[in-house]
Image: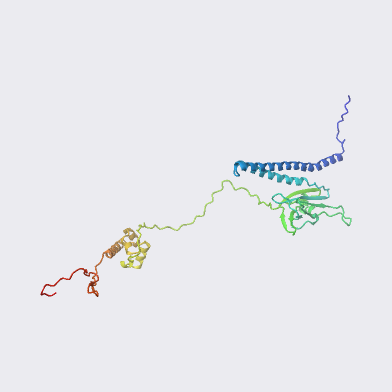
Length: 363
């Protein structure tokens, strides 16, 4: 039996046929990807419902704070995050990839908030490094999905029949041309609201190039701080600032005095001391004669600065206290009441009978 198989040789299939086949397959990839995301999203919805039922069942059995209930809640939260990410990719895969020729350029993408939801009715435009709007690129408005698209097409000739001038965004600076660098210009992506107020400026610049398509997802409110290096290994300890303390003076030991009442206390002036001595005694806590009389002799010496003076004052104070404590007898005042009886201190008792005079004598 003859072998009818034929080996394909190079050049048997035209290049145009291969290009059309590859382009058709590439164009069909996004619809296939979108369909796969739809199936995955449906699976995650079913999983979410199962987690909700399991959480309710375990909560009724063990309580809301049980470890098994907490584990189910965590899995449900992870599933919700996956659903959000899948939804973002669904929206991206559902967008038909724009095509351009060598004289065209397309910039498209999505504007979303930090929760991943598309933000509609916003304006997206390109600005050069001087802060001026690149009018040749126009602007794009976000739809309900947050999707926008900007198109640029360079015509072969202008209205006068002359070669069209390329937009400034696609002309390299003179420095780049002179050094042979790539002919690319940096522009910034601005997002504005309906009142023409700038809501967001992308940190990463865009470098548009004819014949290319750029895609970007812009997240509002996702500005991050610049990355800083970690601290050095084993940094030296920071020493607190030292302050010079004033020299402290050693205070003499104080003797705890029993609580005394101020009623009947004798002032220090009775000791015959001057103002300087009285001030030293008061600073030592000796406010009256009674305190000086009962104080420790060393305390008095430290306060007055002289042992002899301290001993003399204490003896005098003790004498004053002793004299104050000794009762004194004062002569009584005798008076006669209206009834003829004696009254006052040292009066005779009412029951004392008058001594009778002897007969024939005088009383």
